[in-house]
Image 1 (cartoon, rainbow, N blue to C red):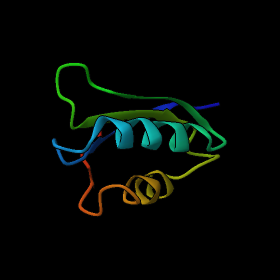
Image 2: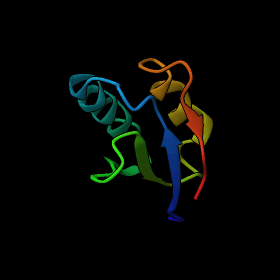
Image 3: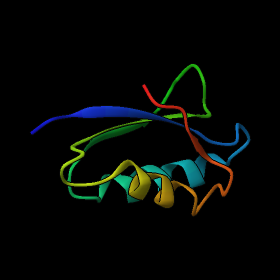
Length: 75
């Protein structure tokens, strides 16, 4: 398994409940190893995943259910 990280930038005023739901939904994807928001920057979501199992585009699609303007910043 090859693990990579991506950083997704979401709106900084996204409610905490929605952030929790987003983390839970992304973590359900096969191939996702970890999902967490930065404790220092609440708008930065880091996802570690296996790109042979799930694509970064799929992770971004899930994120955009809560923030249509979410963008991948990479790592």
